[in-house]
Amino acid sequence: MKIYNAFVAFCCVTVFAAFVASQSQEHPGLKVSVSTSGLNFLKDLVVKALDDELQNVNLPTQQGSKGVSYKIENIVANKIRLGKTSVRTLTPNVFQVKANNAGLEVNADWEVWKRIKILFLPAFTVRGSGSIRARTSGVNIEQNIIVERTANGKPKFTVSGCSIRIGRFSTHVDVDNLPSQIDSVLNLLIDPFEGLIKRELEKRVCGLVRPGLQSLGDKLTRNFELNFPFVFDTKIDLGLACDPSSTGHSGLVCLNGKSYPEDRPDVVFPFPAPVLSEVSDSSHMVRISISPYAPNTLLHSLYLQNRFKKTFSPKDVASVFGVSLPVGAIARLLKPVLGSNPPPIALYAKLVQFTVEANHSPMTHFTPEGIEVSGNFKITISAIVNGQPQKLADFSINVMALVGVSVENGKIKASIKSLGADASSSGGLPVHLINPLLNKFLPQLILPAVNGITEAGFKIPTLYGLKFINPVVETKLDALEVASDFMV
Image (cartoon, rainbow, N blue to C red; front, side, top):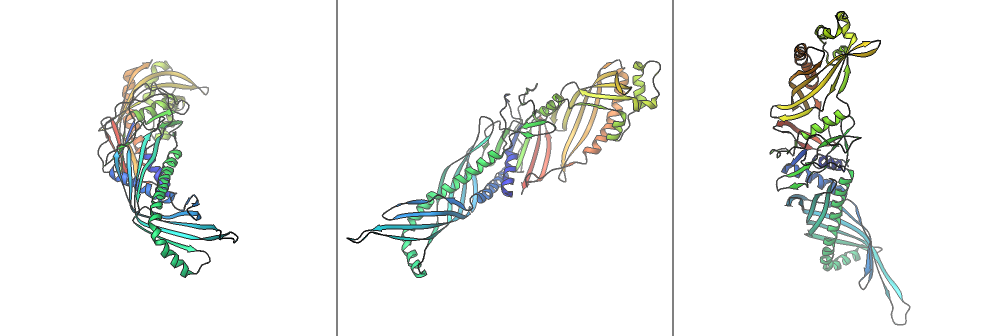
């Protein structure tokens, strides 16, 4: 079960299924490249999972008559070993799995009988029964797997084109209630028929491997969580945007990569999915290239849910960020709207509250220097009168930030490299007083406070027993790339 879970987890990193969405997407939001080492790692997971799938496989009863009536039942294939395996690409979406020097053992019970009539004597039936063990080694198996995309974005695995050649083969027959000497003679007599049994078994082994692989593919598709819960009440659509493809050295999967509110799966975004550049060459098992479309759909979904609206007091800022708002500067800023009799400066920390809300969805852009984030926000300043807020003034600001992302010691770390803002409009407040306040408050107070939280990093979790090894995060022009190796 651990190997199967890791197999599912690795495939969840590389191939995801999606829900049916009414909005078409011109370009993928994510591209996943799997290197040769990644394909080999995936192959090893498949082989181990298939080994588990093929242990103690029960085969159907065989019966008939060839001069003598026979019945072979309780047929169990066990001790199946796939030996040395390899994967190669026949066409971009057709893979051939080869197993060399595989082996298996088949145990079964047999019974034969014949009704005999001699002249005038009463007819009678002669019966015999026992068990049989067949062992093979040096088995070479070739099996093709076709990977396709269904109409709703799910991966589809079709197993076809099996061929097999058995090298070494031996059988041993036990007969019930007979001395061991007779058993030995019987096994000598069966030697000439081993070639016939071997050829029949070659037909049967493909009947074992092909359903086993197909069962794995069906189970993998069935166990995919089609709508992945994301942050807050959003989900992410990681359905296939194109058919998976491969060369002899790497595989490529394109994913939609868009987020959407749970209650609005048919949301139409006000921006297109841009063309995503090819994934950079990498020695890692998996490398994912992320378009700005992916984070921008998440930000827009959060905006539709009013997640970018927050009311706080100077005390709230102090408790969250550990910094104090410049109350004196705020008092001077509000003087034009408070009239000639403003409250004492000491009371501002208790009597004033701020509401920040996005005027539109924030946007991201990837550059070699980092992640650029921009947004336009409305800030409303209110006074608390008899426990209720009364609006004093409002103004809008443009905020620009450059965020650096890295991975260190198994943790994802982020830091704001620069943070700036300028007032774009105001309602009754002097802009020449707003901008100096923003340029002091944001870079000197908020920026170091936020970095103090994010620079500590967030530990990368283990996914279904699959550990991320040597992960890296890099920003480039119009793409964020994440790469990692894996181990179970």
